[in-house]
Length: 219
Image (cartoon, rainbow, N blue to C red):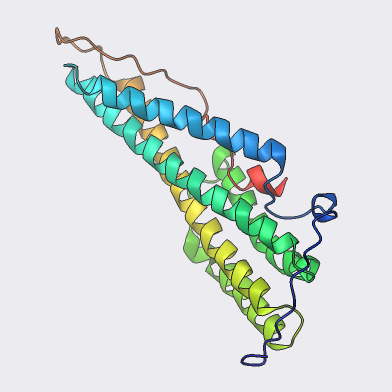
């Protein structure tokens, strides 16, 4: 044992891994969906690269710049989600998975609920200051459980990484959503451009098209 934390041998049996239900797990369906999202984001990035080679109006240029930021945030969020899925799979192969999952679940549920409220319009922004107590609580609970020998050092490290990555994922998703709403507002109020340069039409959505990222792997 190191610092009072016991090292629990990881289970090598994978037969029951996908029979369990819990936090982030890269099931075949989720892996396929992640690959499809990544392909869409790559195609959007390619479009912006190609479009930047042509003269456009100032309005279109500003919209494309905002779109590029959205694409960048979502690429980063997708990479973070994939890392979370990988960690979730690693955690499920550990014999103390259920105990670690139960400690992580309240944090993921709270972040997912607030993000859902923002997407639904009942909440304006996500204040991480307000989430700080829950964030500190889950980290403290994990550490105390490890010190008491209830979970392994490996599960502690994995759980702490998942907490940090989930916060990073939410931040990137919210930045993308903020850019999208700003672009929609600009498109809705801006008069048609009188420039002779070809314009790039940017669709206006009644509702944000971004899904709640936490629900991608907690549902």
